[in-house]
Image (cartoon, rainbow, N blue to C red):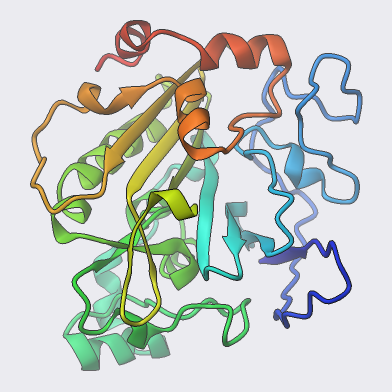
Length: 322
């Protein structure tokens, strides 16, 4: 895992644990046909500056925030390189977004979440088994310091479940990759109705697209919940920010090199919306940017970005068969 800090003023003194791993062939993932690798911005005015962080140029990355409380956490595994990435707000102790890629090389299954119930060499699985009767290795983020990260006990006796952003089922290609999805920085409070209802159905659909080699060459995924002050549902007694809305932004590069994009937007309620057609939650990326203030897929060339982000909802539903 690589933690990238960006300091904008000298009084910012949060102490963050930094763990850096290298991956010489990172990435074994395919490069998008239209990805720009240099710093030439002639046809991409809003791309992320890469500088010493070339990862910022990946197509799944939204535009990195200039907020001085923001840090970028890049998760890696030895087998697959970058697993997923989080932009994390150290003041609100919550993520702004999580992003990752699906492609042929990382969409296989080599781990079963149920195996955690029997993984006696994992202290977090054992702790959760003893405490709750299930072995999922939920754990404080090992790369964030106390006071900045969230802790296991903050989810005790509250009205919300631990809701994955990068789902456990999104990362079954290795044991290490799956465990990283249980870091609490990748978890947000969700009502049971949402977490086990329409959010899970959205996750299932994304997983079906991500694992389908005939559907995509690369599927770029960004997910999160709203943590800006105007779009917070509540703050728990333990201090956890509860989003008012959750979202997904998807960019698909098909096997011919063509792109299409889609966004899901759902209100965080206790209403059981399970079984509601997913098309009811579709908006285009430009509208999602307006609602969240996040610039998605900024590393696409401007012309292509504008094309895929402004598609009509009816055309999006048709293209994605929703």
